[in-house]
Amino acid sequence: MSPRPERHDEPLHLWAERLEGMLRARELGIVDRVAVLASTGSTQDAARQFASGRPGLAVLAGVQTAGRGRLGRAWSDDEGRGLAVTVALDGERWGVETLALAAGLAACRACERALDRYALGLRWPNDVVERGRDGRKVSGVLIERDGPLALVGIGINVLHERRDFPPEIRDRAASLAMLGCGATRLDVAESLLVELDRALGMGPEDLRRAWLKRDVLFGTRRTFIHNGRPVSGTVEGIDPASRILVRTNYGNVVSLPALSTSMVHE
Ligand code: BTN
Image (cartoon, rainbow, N blue to C red):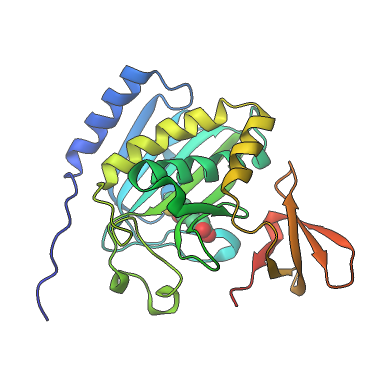
C-alpha cells in the first residue's frame, strides 16, 4: 500500500498558544482557558476532570480513543483526523435545549466558514450534514450535565479520507477535506469557539431562526425511532425545546424529544 499523504495540520504544541491568543484578542465570554491534550479517551471526561466545577474551559484532543456520541454511540478518532472539543459551560445559565441549538449552529457555521455556505445544513437535533437527501454527516454534538456544568462536546470531521471512517459509517460520513476544504483542525477549532460564543449570545428567536434556515429535514418524509418504536411521517418543524414535530401517516402531529429519538437512514 502506498504511504498515506499527510494532510496539513499544525503541530499540537501550537494549538494552545494560538487559541489563547485568539481568546485574549476577542474576549469571548464563554471560554477563558484552554487545555490541549495529545490523546485522551473522551474530551467530555477530561473536561469534567479539569474544569473542577468551574465553567469556561475548552478541552481539545489531538487523538480521542473512546469518544462518545449521542444515544450511546461511539465517536472515536484514533488517528487524529477530526476535531474533538468539549467546552464546560454554566449549565444554570443555559438550558440544554438552548445549548443543543447553539452548539449545532456553531458547528455548522464553523464548517461554513471553511466551505461554501450552502453546501451544508443541520439535521435535527444537531448534526451538520451535506445538503440533499441523506447527506453525509460532518459534525455531531453531545451535551452532558455534570452538576452545575454543561459539557458541550462537538466533533467535526476535518482531515479524514473515506477509509479513515469505520466501514459501517463510510457511506454516511464525510470530512471537510473530502468536501474540498483545506482548513486545518486548528483553523476549525478557532472558528468553532468564536461561533459558539456568538450563538450563545443570540436571543432565543434569532437562534431558532438561524437554525431553521439551515434545517434539512423540514417537509421531508422520515422514520424516527422513539422509545424503541418507529414513527413515520412528514417533518413539520422543530419547536423551541428542540423537539421535532412529525405529522404521522394517521394525520396527527407528534412531538419527539431529542434525548430519546433517532432517525432511521433509509
Ligand atoms: C453524535 O453525533 O452522536 C455526537 C458526537 C459528539 C462527539 C464529540 S467529540 C468531542 C466530545 N467528546 C466526546 O466523547 N464526544 C464529543
